[in-house]
Image (cartoon, rainbow over all chains, first blue to last red; front, top):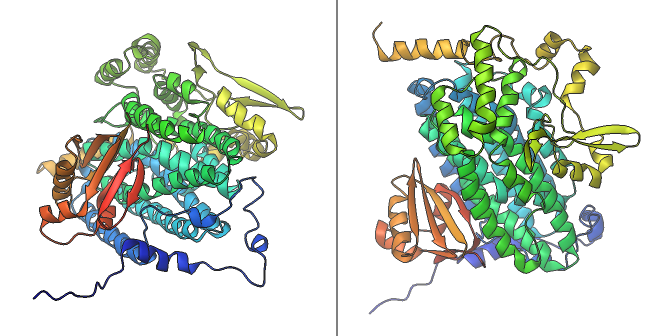
Length: 505
Length: 89
């Protein structure tokens, strides 16, 4: 006879209820408004916080168990990388520019996101939301730490890794990502969720991490594949939190729709500009390329973003306002930014280079309507100058967009031969923008963006235009960390060490 | 039609999981990329605990998927027995 045994474990829903919902309580000697002072001022109306639920129903006990497992896997491989000359197994040292850019601009963003989620986890009244935000805060700090740890192995051998924290705070191109996160962290809790949880995690993170990690795999970088996948295993949860949060806001009150739509418009465009740096990485910096930026956009932007906004249409949400301008920019942006990075390479803590003939063939194939027509002639001209011993260097400072902080290097959406430049006068001061999208973000909240910390004016405010003093301040070692890859220490060392590792000479 | 997808690390742990997903979702397309397997399906994808357990020959908690998950797309719904991804298109 079969014995019926009592079921010992709780099912997922019961466990989630007991270990999450039951942790919430009603304040008794202070009002809810006093305990959660920031939850109303943005205008989002919430009638029932109990309606918000994590679809993964992950509880803290399970969270620790799985995160510990991820860390064990991560450190096993990072150790193997360090013990097996992992720094010599990459395709070639040009690849390192992508890692340097990532470490200087993106890893500090992970840390900023960690601070942001710790804050909103405290500011949201719903206990399901609080627990999910707490997990995400811990995840983001883990990401920053594991990325820094993995890349520290490269810092033992190569230039440009040593001062990522100074670069994050002071150098120019990093302020693109920094201003994005600072903007989100200084917004209210709901806007922060749309900025990071929805726009960045859901709409854009696949475009950042998936090609980047596949790029690392293609280029023999085991350490980065590992930190990337370890971080990315958390992203599925973050994306789901972002999507649930937006659905929750839209289901709670119809008045929330116009506010949420405004944030989607703003944060899609802000995020899209940050990804401009990723587009150059994909099209130019990977010696062995995975797919073009255009191809990645087709999969993760057009197809996936399209599916998302068709789904959200039931709430009245439309695709972000800048979507069409983004589509028009896809075939141009990586070339325009790389040309910018090359001409200002005296001020970058990574190397750039003139694409080889093979690289240009690949770019022409991937960008059949734009590369040969607009960009190959410029690279060829630059190549001719370099061959004549007069390499093209721009020692003038870039004019920066007051919103995204990228140099104003983009062209008009409908005319790739005309530089796009927008101006707004606010309280007697003139402000410059790279696009309609960035100008609109400014004009909606000028009092916020007039305070933006812009890296170029610092050079004059602090150093009276003295570039060498500025380089000291950003911890950039002239002749080592910056300039052309061709002839750099990274290039020489990599070739020499790889030669030593593969021969007996 | 909208595409839902799930991407998993390509490793020994996920091999039988991917086989289970293929069994339960005949309409799914499996794309094998370096270090990663991305599975696309029109509008809906279902992952069943029982099918995975049959493939790996031991008890499996669907939350173990978290360890090897890279990314996904679609509205998530999970309980002990299934994890589903859906788009309303």
